[in-house]
Amino acid sequence: MKRTTFLSFAAAMFSLMSLAAQAQAIQPSGGARKIYNTVKTKLSQGKTLNGAFVSVPDPNVYCAMANAGFDFTWIEMQHSPLTYGDVAKMLFACRGSSAMPFIRVPDATESEVQKATDIGALGLIFPTVDTAEKTREAVKWAKYPPFGRRSIGAGQFRQLWGSDYRQTANDNIMVIIMIETATGVENVEQIAAVPGVDMIFIGPSDLASFSGTQAGDPKFEAMVKKVHDATMKAGLKLGSITPFKGRPDFTFFVGGDEASLIKAGAKALLEAK
Picture 1 (cartoon, rainbow, N blue to C red):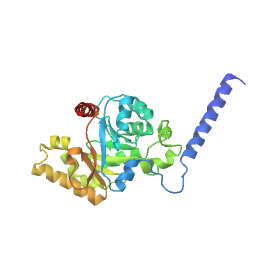
Picture 2 (cartoon, rainbow, N blue to C red):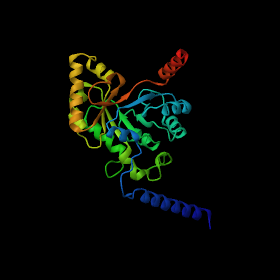
Picture 3 (cartoon, helix red, strand yellow):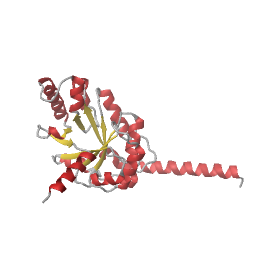
Picture 4 (tube, rainbow, N blue to C red):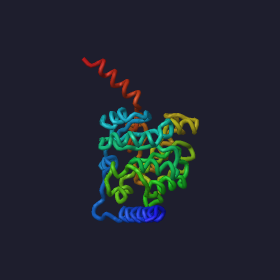
């Protein structure tokens, strides 16, 4: 067989095998829903969840945090130099950890969301969302058809979450929308009503910065109340940073990063008798 003919035959066979694999991947699995995102399970049980920020590209540090007792890790890709390659190595090195991997992506675009989901994120956090249109974009790229437009591609998601990932991903990936501006507060009822959203998260630092107010001010507290009421009306979960603990109906909190946790651990060790 001539080399060109052989190469054409091999390419055709590879294409057919790829199509067959994709066709098999999208077949419905049937039976009960398979939930391996423990954050979803705990939230449905009414539990309060805690997580910590990750911005250092070190698998050993990541594994220490992911197995420290947190419910989730908040992998910071909006305000850090982390790359998707860095995060992929971290998640793979620590597969099976007790904390679920959540990523704050820079924007609700196909490119950002596809990379985050392909490397195995189970939570997608979208910053400074102002409109229902942006929210629909976030859901669209996070979900496989028929609920969204996420495409099938290569990734380590199957090694992390199983060979039936295509059938189970839509039930496990969480979409978390951050309200951080006065415009987002204005539109929060429409934002919370978008199908596929799991949680509304108030970012108080940016909300204060964008609105020219601060926590405790009547205007700031009125915005928090509006977000709270819209979230509860929509039947969604509500989250924020740890100083918001104690506020009604907030059940998802993030606080502390690698440096602060190392410092706190060292202090506790040195002060131990």
